[in-house]
Each structure stands twice: as structure tokens, then as C-alpha cells.
Length: 398
Image (cartoon, rainbow, N blue to C red; front, side):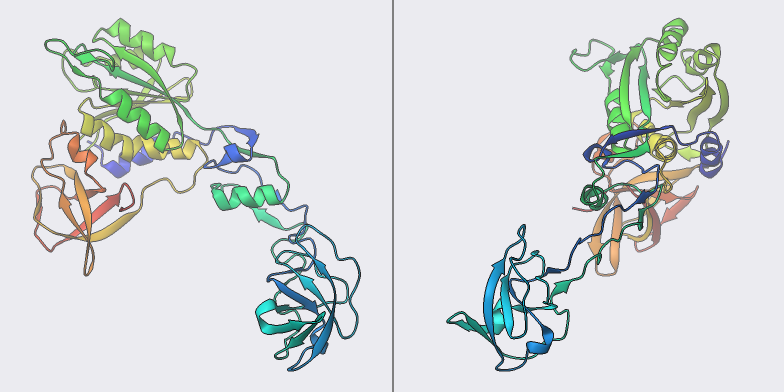
């Protein structure tokens, strides 16, 4: 069996970023920039006030200095005239400085009356003034390819006048669940049936990874039925199936993939939950066969499929953050495979502590519902209470 690291290396070595497309700037949120962005504007385009107050000349300021107020300028307007020696102009935040002014006196630092202001002290030149080009100058290379576009980058693009931007495509991911026993959402499970969980958890994980899921529904445990669904995924960038990848008589996914023309690169990984996992290539597309138990499917998606989707989308950081925490109760991983155990994280005096979310069976979906992370525990190991745990962080603490 491969280690998790060997399996992930094998997967990532066979996937690369997809093509690019131009999208509206708001639709680019969460996407990966595929081109450099060079400014064609200066921001701000002229010196402006950072305060409500009075535009003055610094050389006219000083304790007791009295200046004549000769006008006002608001944000969105222009000064009606320049100011000269001994003059001031009422100004508001964001308004352009009138010619001749080089400083702003905050309104709370003056006494007013009869069209004049009296200053309470001297100011340095350029006080409370945002200079032209303080943020961005024409020709500045402000964003690099590979940048993940968040709210700040979207705002900057809009400020610079970019209504569209080139980004990497989102992977389109086909999701297939297999098994005679599955009753899909909207139907009541009959005798011997269980609800179809994996289609919906995997689609949600695909969305969380920034990709677009497409459901192929449920295929029965017949080779031709699974092959038909595999071939139906030809327009997707990735196929993810669940169940049918072990060694049982009805575990037919690997045969269906090879019959459809896939080359399989790996099968078993030394981990729990989730030892049986298949990865291959089919007509240039990545195909994954994940275990059928819900927790196993989710954990193997986290460790193998999610990094592949992020790389396809142009991301550079492909794995979740990891941290060292204190075990708040013993954490046991019996057996010969490395454990990825579901834990809750809790603030403690020394940082963070972790405890198991309960029973760790691979069919106990509530162990994932309660999980903030996955504790990575070596084989045949019991981490005592107070011991050191490595945890893959799945979500932010509330």
C-alpha cells in the first residue's frame, strides 16, 4: 500500500491547471488570476483630504493664526478657485485640494466665526492630505498571476476600471454514487436500502473547493450501468465515484473505468478510514473511485480530491493548514494504518486542545458533522491526555 504522501504525489503529478476565461469582476471572487494586472490609473488621481476641515497653506498655520474662509469643496466637486496667502477653504473628506493648499486642518482644531478660522497650532506640510498616487500609480503591477481574488482584490480591480479579468476555469466535477442499496433523495428507503448520502456530501465538498459539481445520480451494481455513467462524464474535468472500489464481487468501479479506457495509477492507501481508493486518467481527465462509507468518502476527498481540484483551478496552496494541539483525552489509533480521526478543537490556556468527536466508525457521519479537524495519528499509537497531536484544520473555530 502507498502512504498518503506517495498517493497524493502520484495524483498531483498527473493534474495541471485548466484553461482560462474572462469573467465579470464580481464573478471572479474566489477564482485564481491568470494574468498580471497593470494599473492604468493613479489612485487617488489628485491630492485630497483625509478629514473634514479646512484646506490651508502650512506656512500660514500657527497658534492664533487667523485665516479667511474663501469657499468650500465637497467630495465629488471641484474647488471654485485657488487659495492664497492668509486664506483657507472649507473641505470635506475625499474632496480634492484647491490649488495653493498643501495641508488640511481638522475642523475640531479650529475656532470659527465671521467667515474666518483661528488656528490652535502649527501643522506640518501635507498633514491630513492623501497625495496623488499614494495607493497606485500608472504602470504599477498591482496583482500577479496565481493570486486568489478576494474582496480586496475585487475592489482594487473595480477601482482601476477592470470590468472583466482573466481567471482559471473552475473544474467541472461529475459525481457518481454506486450501489443497489441506495435510495436517492426524494424517495423513502425500502427494505434493505439506505439513503444516498455520498452524492450530496461530495457535491458540497466540490463546491467548498471552488469547483462546479454535476450529479450523475446512482448506478446499480451492474458493470454496464456503471460504465454508462462513466462515459456520461465525458464533458467533466474530473469524475468522482463512491463505493465499489474494494475486492468484493460487486465492487465493479475499477473494471468499469478500465473498460471505458481509463489508465489506473493507484488503488490502496495505508490510512483509516478509507484504504480502498482508485485514481486514474481517462481521456485527459482525472478519475477517482472513493470508498462507499460516508466518512471514508469525505476524508479521502479531503486528502486527495480537494488538492487536485485546487491545482486544476490554478491554486498554489493545495492543502489545509496543520497545527499542533494538546490532546484533551486519550486518542487511540490501533492497527497498522495511519489514522485520520475526527476531532473537535477547544481553546485552552496553552492554545488549542482537541478531543475525539465520539465513535470513529467510517459510517458515523455525525463524527464529521462535529469535526473541526482531522487528527493525524501514527499506527498502533495511543496519544495520552495532554499529549501532542497534529491536526489538519477543516474549518474555522466559531
